[in-house]
Image (tube, rainbow, N blue to C red):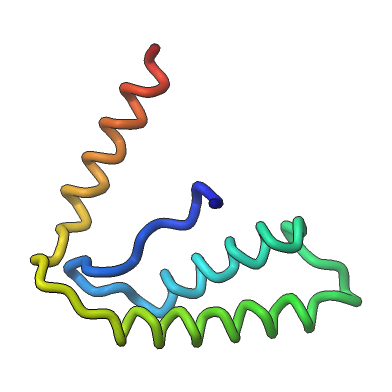
Length: 89
């Protein structure tokens, strides 16, 4: 899985449409191997990003959990600490 795609479910504040679109863009880039598609492939590439964004938004809004929402700042700090530990060795 692409390292730039982060979990988006069950966070406070809730995920934004821009975050879902960014994750969808990363997913399409990973699938296609294109960072930026050619003019010929651009329409299909952007259509795929739009469709995946819609499906991902629908998925996130339909999921349910009993767990309390995670705090974005705390989770980012934990990830940064894990990264520092992993790359300091």
